[in-house]
Length: 162
Image (tube, rainbow, N blue to C red; front, side, top):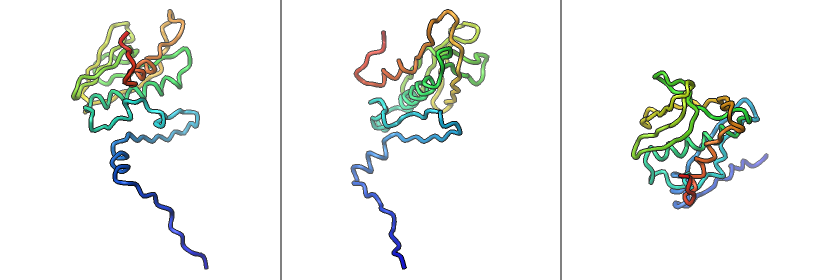
C-alpha cells in the first residue's frame, strides 16, 4: 500500500500576498510556437509599480506599449506597426505616438492610409485596439519601431521627449 502524499503547498507571508495581488499578470497561448508572448519577467519599472497607484488611463497606456513592442518583435524589416480603428473612416493608421490624460483617456497619433494626420482619443472603458503589420513607407530605409521608443519612457529615469 502506498502513501498518499499531498502536493506541496507554498505558504506566502501576508506581505507577499499583498505584493502578488498588485503585480501585473498575463497569460497567452498560441497555436504557433514561434509567436512571442510579452515577457513579464523583464517588465519596465513602470509596469512593476503597484496598479492601485495608477489611473486607469496610465495603466492602459503602459500595457498597450508592452503589446506594441512585442508585436514589433514579430515584424520583418519591411513592416511596422499600424493600428486598426473601429468606427469612423480612419481605417488603419501608422502609429506615430501614444499618450494618456488622467484619469481615463488614451490617445493615439498617426497617419492614415491617405496620408492624413490622425488622432484617436479614447476612453479606457471603450478601449479596442487592433495592431496591424503595415508596409513601411517606400522612402524609409528602415521600418520605424515606436514600441521600443515608447518602452524607454516606461523606465522612469529615461527622457524620450526628443
